[in-house]
Every structure is written in C-alpha cells, then in structure tokens.
Length: 158
Ligand code: SME
Image (tube, rainbow, N blue to C red):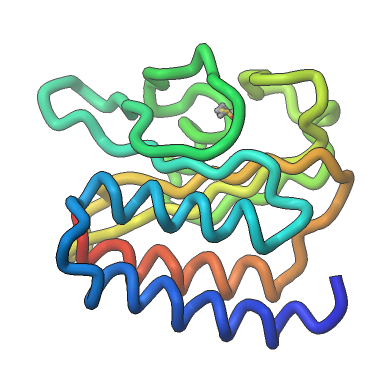
C-alpha cells in the first residue's frame, strides 16, 4: 500500500465523523461501521473486530461487532491467545507471523499475522481492536500509531 499515512489520515477523519456525527446510529452500529471502514480500505486488514471486557465475568473478553468470517472465539479469557495476552499486558501486541506464536487461537488457516490494540477509558482497560491479516509481516509503526489513535477515538463510544 503506497502512502499509508495519507490513507490513515483520511480514515481517522471518517472514524471521528462516525463517532461524533452519525447521530442516527447506535453504539453497536458505529463500531460495526468502523470495522467495515477499516476492512474495506486497508487491503491487508482481512478480519476486523472488537472484543469487549465482560464486566459480569472475571477477566474475560466477549466478541463485539466485527467484519469478516465468523469466529468460534466468541469468549476469550485474559491470558489466552494473542487477544488474551494483550488484555493482560494492556499493550499493543503485533504478531507478524502467527505460526511462530505458541499462545495463539487460530480462526482460519488463511490468517498469517495479527495486531491487537487495547482500548482504555479513564485508565481502565475496557476492550480491544483485533485485526487479522492474510499477509505475513504487513504491520508497521504507521499501522500501530493509526490504530492506537482509532482506539482513543473509539473509547468515547464505550
Ligand atoms: N487469533 C486470536 C483469536 C481471535 S480471532 O483472531 C478473531 C487470538 O489468538 O487471540
């Protein structure tokens, strides 16, 4: 993808618009619209979804809105898989080659890499954005910065 930063800048504007201006959409619809926007505009984002902390359970994530194929991983305990590890550390977790990650929950054999970005509200970990790619090593620092900004904007919704 040429000039990622230009595309990411435009997408951030669109994400802000979805969050702040699309008043007819529910919170769930806004999250889904953001997943769709990311999946459709970044060619190597093949599955885009939100996992949210289930506050009724002890340290467990539950699948929220997503775009891409169905996944069996609807609930993920903290510590399990790439999502669960990111939940425990509260840090962006990039795996450029999932075949090299032992603590990994496979969704589809097509997936080669994954990035998970935590979402915080008032310093509390409340969920994360999870992106799978069918490409090896596609994620750069630009993706990390862009997706961290995306999660900052999204946290207003949660
Ligand atoms: N691969 C993730 C599980 C979620 S799916 O990617 C949608 C993991 O290892 O936590």
